[in-house]
Length: 367
Ligand SMILES: Cc1cc2nc3c(=O)[nH]c(=O)nc-3n(C[C@H](O)[C@H](O)[C@H](O)COP(=O)(O)O)c2cc1C
Image 1 (cartoon, rainbow, N blue to C red):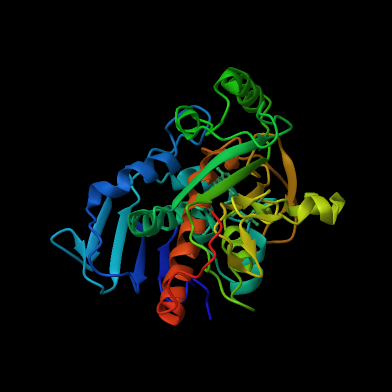
Image 2: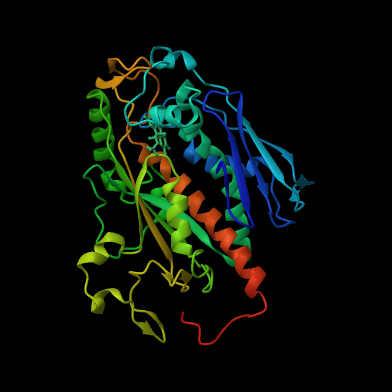
């Protein structure tokens, strides 16, 4: 049970390290007949990629996907799909000084305690480089979800440090604006302020946390399983598996604590639900409303500001990170969070089809 695989029917196994020759994944259980070509991966991979703006890490990876199996004449065949991306810009030298040091906030110490051996170059397997393959696998998932059901899974940055989008409560997110700036921020007028904010952080040698919101729209009712396969439970697990995530909320999330039942319970009306505090999920099963999930990401641990740690000999040392790091890891987490939501949804959709495919549309269906 080494847990590098994910999903029950649409199963993704990733492999590779940050500074190894390549990273990759094997997708098993993918429906046949989905049109897919190497260029289909470019858009989402470039949204996740480093080096696209001065506000993220300056590692420049080409992120070119090689399809090794499971696709014939640009169509999935139903057999395992193997995808490979070669690492072309790993600079292991940046980590030479830290080879025998456990960097604070990283998985160095815990991997060492678990395995008694580790690949320290760029964080090895614990690096967010691994999430590239989740995004690649989700390109196929998103395509199937969109073409079969019109489901769209889209995310945006909903908070960075203490800055929140200037939006009124319940405002509709304009995803054209989100995609038009380096921060995946929904309010264009605030972007110059964010640029200044991140530039100042970098100058200060520090970092900051963030919140990412994901919306899955047009999800049909009925996806998700009682009791241990609840959709919200699987979303929480999938989103929590992203590097640096320290919290997950579904719908109103922790704000539910101070709500009253009369406010929270999303009354049913014949023309639609009155609100969506449940985040589109009741009893672990979709209601047909948008599925809403949020994640909290911690501030980047590798910063220029010196910090204390210990080395392999157990001696107290000072750590000062060199290398190319994201001042706010939450920015690039947007496509990763979308990917995990899409992977959970395709898996649940296939499971729903397997068990309840004969049930069909049940009346009444609330718009
Ligand atoms: C998109 C993304 C990029 C990241 N880049 C960095 C980085 O440049 N420097 C860093 O210290 N941590 C970075 N992280 C976070 C680390 O991978 C993570 O904190 C570390 O592996 C320990 O795991 P944990 O925080 O999940 O416990 C990144 C995370 C994400 C999601």
